[in-house]
Image 1 (cartoon, rainbow, N blue to C red):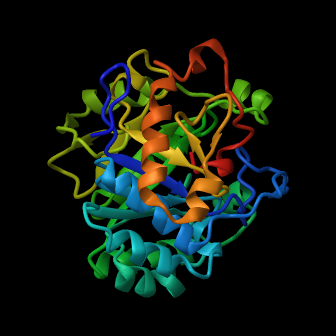
Image 2: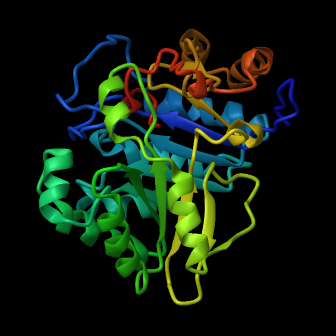
Length: 322
């Protein structure tokens, strides 16, 4: 089992397959995608080498992220390779849902178990303003199709101060009859969004206190789960999760590592730099990749230091998939 110097065990790999995104979300890429790294993206075969390496280190869950993963035409091949890897129990994709109705059948046939879709508001006009695309009905249609296929669906919503209560009430109404998990994610500061963060950051604990007052109950956390604290309520078919990176103990239970689309190991989303593994990955030797990761894990810091306003090399969340 891959373990760092603080005894944290890593069951969960977040593998970015592209840093390209077709949305222009106000907190991430308000001016759209601007290429900044000319390094080649990992091929599907190279991605499979990464997954085999991490499976050999005890990883049980793989999440394919971006940018926007659906922009990779070979994503079903990458999903299938991860699903077929011995030791991997769960394969997930995080997507903006733009192509979901067209691609979900292929993803499920390839072995997809779980899907996270980013929806920051259920108001169609506001969604178009946030993302640059008037496609909310299509995204919601894709979620219904995924659920019909037996894919476990979660929805990610970034907490933004202006209009937060209005959006919360709309989501609560939606969750009464929809058996999905909605995860509110506290806005994180990156290198490119300093001013936006200052005017839009809302602490997740504010929402959490409100949910507790209204009878929501905390659920146990799976060991390969992400960082969300999930809550249920007997009157709702859906659940609510909260991801609060500015809480003091957020990093204590870290169980995930990241590989960028360019083959760099990021021990933390907000690390100062990624550690280049591309040449080892390209060799196809998963044992060599695993050994190098084992050597580097000792450099993982105790914290992301967001409270100290350090954001490392993360210019925007599309770089590594958040």
